[in-house]
Image (cartoon, rainbow over all chains, first blue to last red; front, side, top):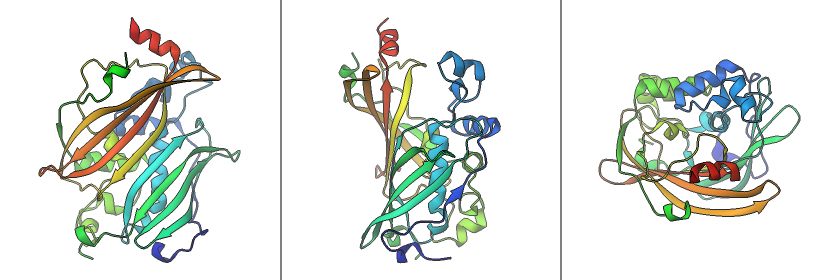
Length: 140
Length: 149
C-alpha cells in the first residue's frame, strides 16, 4: 500500500463506496452508540418530526468517513476531525467517502473530507488533520 | 435562559473503553480493521494494543449539567469536532465531563435559531487531557418554547 506521508497536495485517498443505507445499519448504530432518537429507526416518529422518512444518524456517516484513514494508522493518527452536517441521509442512499490532501506540514497532513450522496450532494463535509508524529506513544 | 448555562459543567465520570463495546461500534460503522478488535493485531501494531475509532467518544458517559434539559425534539446536530493528543486505547480508563462552551441566537430563513456549543472532555487517570469533542446543536424556536414551559 502507498504511504500517506508521501502524498502530494491535490492527491486523493481511494474513495470508499458504501452499500445503500439500510434500516438495519441504523438500528445497529443506535445500539452501538446509544443514540436511540427514534427519527433514525421508526418511520412514524420520523414523519411526526416532519421528515419524509427515517434519516441516518449524522454520527453514523461521520464514523464511516473516518475509515478512509484506517489503512494509514501505522503511519499516524487522526489528530483533529471536524465535520459540518449539511444534508440528510435517507434509506437507500448510496454514500461515497472522499478525502483530498489540501496542505502538508512537516508532520501533519490536512485533508478536506466529504460524504457525497448518489446525486452528488455533499451531506457531510469537513477536515481531518492526520498527524505523523506518533513516536512519543508508539514503538515506532 | 440557555445563555446562563455558559461555563457550566458536569461532574467527571469514569469510563472504561470496553473491548466488546468497541467491537460493536466498529461493526456498526462497517470498520473491518483488526487494529480495533483483534488482540494479536493490536499487539503487532505500532500502538502495541487495540485502539478505538475516533468517533467512539459518543458512547461515553459524561454526566449531566444541572439545569440543562434539552428537548428531545427540534434539535439539529450542526457540527462535530474532535481533537486528540493520541488515539484512545481499548481497556483504558477515561474520565469525562461536558461543559457548555457557548450559546447564541441567529435569525435566518427558518426563524430564530439557537446555537448551543457543548464540549466533552476526556482525560486519563493522571489528569492528562486526551481529547475533546465539540458539538454544535441547533435548536429551533418551537423547541426553545417547549423548554421554557
